Length: 387
Image (tube, rainbow, N blue to C red):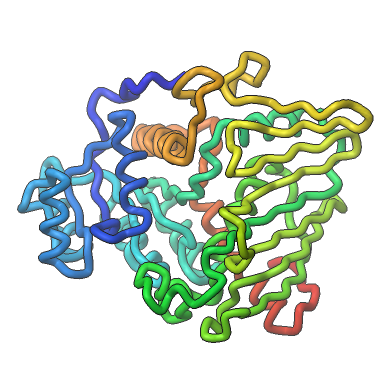
């Protein structure tokens, strides 16, 4: 159980790049990082408009001299301070992630970055090498993985309660972009422009979320090859897709499917993962995140509830209120930021960690998966070896 007391004598001095007024994601970063007193927001370059960013920073009670015009000014100024930032979160459009993350690591900072981490596996590997050389961690905000029942599923699968895993069905298929909403919504407009979003829209923006859930639940499964078909039903989005189907084969012989979609009319969120074994299945849906379906062949369906004593201890460790009370996405993100803080502190002390979190390797795999999907789709939806 988490009671909100800090894990550290002093909170980690923390800054943000992006996440300012109008940001879709900035508030949840701040809410998650500040909740357990493990971080203290002391600096930021919150907006591409320096004056607007400064005004917003002041409303967050950041000192005026530490509200910077851009990340370069912030990293240089903070490095010269005895009380300079130790970590930074990057909440900017996709095309800026690599440049900012690399600069942050070279400045000796831990990094939390929105996904995708960058556009290519070569860039991701460069960040991986830089992080290792600097002995700093990179966390990637696959926020749904912070729900406790994801850990419960991981433990049940590892304990053999499903038997050998045969099939993994994943989807993130909402309907909110069934028309060209980007025409009037700046925060969506850049997501469908390849110059700013990169080589994909829904594959990278939402498909990688359930993919990472599968990586957490099934850490030993490795993709062997895949086939992807992608479509632009709103034609103005081409060449970026608003719908995609990806079939995958794992090295164990198990198979998987990922449906990534922004035009699933009527669907609120539609993110689900179902893991099917030889004896039983597990299913989790992010619209009902406090329940995990456990279905044993020939037996009644069991609904496992968050916060109950019959769960594995690891699935109870991050509860913030007793069972029966619903916890949501803000709590899940807070759990991840708690893990990021522990990993940062361990790295600074020259120690490793014995828990999972979405790290640089998870970010790299997300980029690699998107690259392979695009390669397959652009060749006419052919099977490609995963590389």
